[in-house]
Length: 337
Image 1 (cartoon, one colour):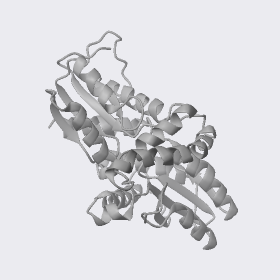
Image 2 (image 1 turned 135 degrees about the vertical axis):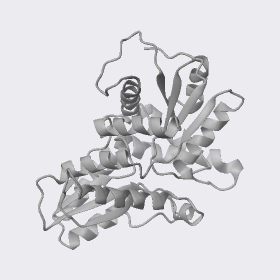
Image 3 (image 1 turned 90 degrees about the vertical axis):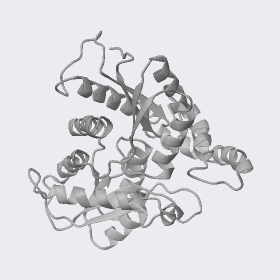
Image 4 (image 1 turned 30 degrees about the vertical axis):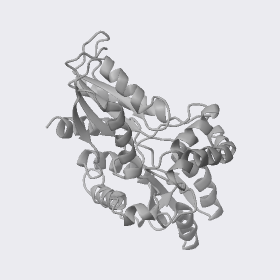
């Protein structure tokens, strides 16, 4: 399948992750070098301090990745999402195969913020393919300057001086097909469970509290998504039970004040209050990576067992049919209007 200058390009922006244990330290260095998400002293000290922190953290982080297969799965999953989206955009049906030599109306690309394929490299490939019309789609549904904002800043630097006709899809936290895709997976995990003792914990990636105080909309977006998922769960075809639910935040690093409550603290509190079955929903993630496969599936699973409860994680969206359909419709409605 080939793109042509008449094709519309779709650039999926994501975080990226180390593709081997050797890549862990340089990945961390790239992450901590980004002053859009963390300021390590004055600007001239950012990179030296990033080097120091990445060096100190690399062994511990390598041990985590070793337990989930020795690398992040995010590139493999994002590649599969891109391929499925490309097929969905170029076919009448999401399951219709496309001839191998077909010229595509839509060509989907991947650009990662902190590891290969880097956004700048992908932008060069898009330009070499002759693409003129480009839709930039952030795979972070909830806008934050630490995620979508940082990735867009990097993209704009790479695209400077290039003649793309650009459209942006920067946030889609309340997009109904996305909400339905999430509700389907939550309902699947709730199936067969009955009150009392069952509770739902929506776990979002944490963010420094200062970001929210400065006007970052991330927390409002997360809360809106959770409210809409809960509402959708009680509608046809799900008709899910009204289990108690909670919102918590995971993956904080560093000494600054982060969003609260933490997922660890919430699990411990729920255990003390008698929760027996806990469904954890990774609400701010559209694919599996270390936050789901290690933090939730290993660390939080062990913590829940110590509290005498059973923890079950809702599947990540990954390449679920409803999620790919949601991305397709998002491109058609938001990128082509």
